Image (cartoon, rainbow, N blue to C red):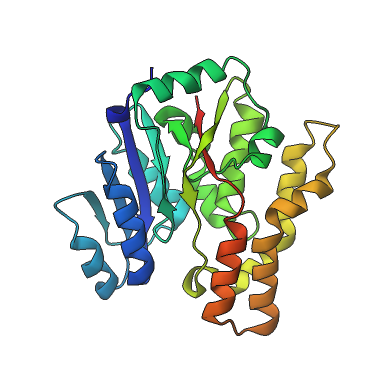
Amino acid sequence: MVMKNNITIIMSYWNVENEYWEKSIQSILKFNIPVIIFNDNCDEEYREQLFKYKDKIKIIDSKKNYGQPTATWNTLQEVKTKYVIRVDSDDELLSLPSTNQEFEALHIKGKVATNIWDWLKNGGSLNGSIYTTELFKFMYKDHEFMGKFNRWIHEDNYALLRLFYYKKDAKIIHSNNRKCYRRNFREGSEVSFKVARRISMRFETFKLMLMQDENNDVKDFIKYDIIIRGYDNYVINKGIITEEFIQECTDEYNKRDFNFSLII
């Protein structure tokens, strides 16, 4: 049985604005479970806002910038618990199963595991889901390769591809009883020219992922990914975004229910 005291939250941290960081760190501290954060050699002002919490979290203070894939891999090496949850430093973890009974209920549901399409449609997400630590390590085993080609295939997508193509015995146990994750768009995280090169590859990656079920119409996935892709296009083509537009995208994207899942 999954125990709440056997879960660690991991995070990679690099130059995130304080208003987003404070929401994120407060959202994870309320669960009173271990937190390990990898400082990916951020600028000093951002390092200071991270180290305000040094007594409440474990910080890996890197003097080199590795990028998200290797930062995640290095953090995983410090995890001592059986289960792990990854949270981005500008997002919020809203909920966890609060009792052992809820975890048990997840296992009972898991007698019939969902496939990737059902999981994605029901709010499946790399972040916010509960993974066995060893499985998450497997997904990030190619972290150096993922970092080199991150401009073409986003590391989240690559990790999920490894899971669904090479770990056929993985079981996804999906819960509909509580929304668990909120993604926050922000100018600092999304305005990047490499995003433009990712846009078409992101869709191609998901097409590969969905090919395993011939009954699925790949075009249907657009409605689950259109907000972020539309945001990317707006940023690249217009070059100017407003706070109101960012909030509009954030609210629209999070109408999708990111309910927690257990992947074992």
